[in-house]
Length: 152
Image 1 (tube, helix red, strand yellow):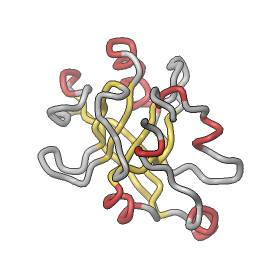
Image 2 (cartoon, helix red, strand yellow; image 1 turned 180 degrees about the vertical axis):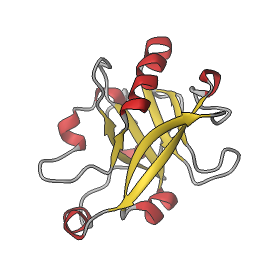
Image 3 (cartoon, helix red, strand yellow; image 1 turned 180 degrees about the horizontal axis):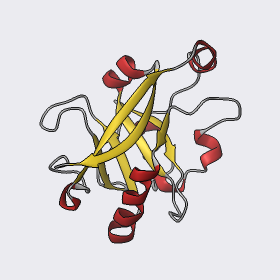
């Protein structure tokens, strides 16, 4: 099993012909470059709510331990960042969002208390759209990877 998930080849995350489930805006990429320079490799987890709502939470890679109830949405490949930023979502939340393409963006404001962007006066948000019928036909039976398949 892979212990450092930031070393997963991007080709395993995005098999040929499948649409991406997650992307990032250029504005968010700028902030992610800054956060990576300060904190090292990063990851995101999109939770189902609680203290910080359902905001995408940015952590140092491996700081948030994922398991069988977390689905790997994909990876953000950003120029000037050497390792892809893996994006996870809780399995129950994935069931609600599986028909949806997610884009991670950033806006001014206070981020989630545990998310790395908080001290920057910015917060990550998601923007979404439904997959087209053509995209969904390709994704509906596609294999999903859960966190327990990558650790130990």
